[in-house]
Image 1 (tube, chains in turn brown, blue):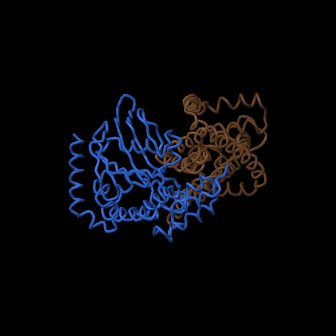
Image 2: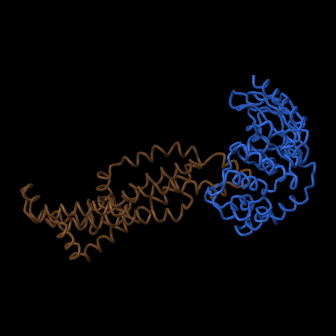
Image 3: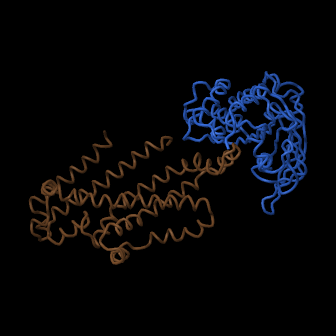
Amino acid sequence: MRRWLLPLGLIALLLGAWQIAASTGAIADALSLEDFLVPSPVEIASSLWENRELLAENAWVTLKEILLGILCALLVGVGMAILMHRWRLLRDAAYPLIVASQTIPVVVISPILLVWFGYGIGPKVFIVALVCFFPITVNALDGLRSVDPEAVKMMRSLGASRRQRFRRVEAPAALPSLFSGIKIAVVVAPIGAVFAEWVGADAGLGRLIQSDLANYQVARQFAAVVVLSGMALVLIGLTALAERRIVTWR
Amino acid sequence: MKPESPGSQTMSAAASGRATPADAIALRGVGHSYGDLPTLAGIDLQAPAHGVLGLVGPSGCGKSTLLELICGLQDPSAGTISIGGATSAEARLGRCAFMPQRDLLLPWYSAIDNAALALRNQGLGRREARAAAAGLFERFGLAGFEAARPDELSGGMRQRVAFLRTLIAGKPTLALDEPFAALDAITRAEMQEWLAAALRTDPRTVVLVTHDVEEALYLCDRVAVLSARPGRIVAELTAPRPRAADRDAAVTDAEFVSAREEAMRALREGSR
């Protein structure tokens, strides 16, 4: 109860304050702006309703980019982590590269990808995968390395092959850590997707936000942000749910 | 390649209690070092089939390393180790089941799935492995806890499941590394009686590492006392009444008390 009531109460309080400040024109006056540039929560909600089809169409595009990007990062990241765990040499060689992948500024690489691959979904998925790759790979590798060496000895003595050791000991031991990585990835993925669309796209919430900015459609812009945040929250919730169903021993 | 029926093999070995020379252990001139640091030197030891050999020594004397060498998890830097004639690490590993110091029950498996791990590794399905382990759960006082998660079990029960896991592997030799060190005094005494009973009904060749002299003399036929690093054998004692049914009477027996004094003396001298 308390866990839900407190944050909901705070949200209601903040929305109420915003509503009063915006509808009385206090914010617009303070910033010397036209009233329509400072929408109230009620105006945003009505924009959300009026533009529901447009928002849903664009949200679906962005969601596809996010999910495909996370999926790619998961496949490549977990695969890399397993290989690096198995071969020390590869870990030593590739680890600095993986850290470097995180330092690539998305701001710089997005326009280049646009030039190379055009306006399609490809470059967006690539950017999402790029920002998700690091937390997933590093956490999966940490999880695999957290395995108790004594447990490995015990399994060897019980006749386990390398594969059986991986399946019965190393993989389950790595799961909690992998889920921590996925949770971080799920949070950064929408940011990556919106940014990739920002640079050049023909659909998606990021593109909608950008074109609304140019047209002073501030209320709809906020509505798009609400949809985006909602999407991220649902993804985090689903990840937490999956974790609770799979990692039952924690 | 799937073994015909590892489950029944385990059971028949358990039921017959037949000792074969193939199960005997012999160490000759075994030495070991980590880099330049010698940890064990000139170890000669023997245990007959179905004999229980104890290794006691001060902390850091290399007794756990010696155990890992015996069961084939490592190779010694000098000397030979043979379990029933098998001398390569790979072959020793096939004949010896290792029980580590902590129980190391895997939290993602139930008690019975932990106990049956070796059977799963041999290729049995989950149902068959559980069925094969269920009888032993009954026999070793764990009935009703098959589906329990490891963290729902008491310390003594966890050790019992860990011991069953080692036993069910169906190997002629068991290597136990301070199996009861983490338990309180009362539970430890209970577990010693329990293990003694288990070995009476299901004899195996056992190497038991412990820092508890009384535990070694109660559970083992012979006890080797190791010195501080590099570990050497400073004394070998024969236990007066190994695995007696009445533990309290056995450990207060005059012969037992003097054997314990002798072992303690050797331990003290070896620690210097």
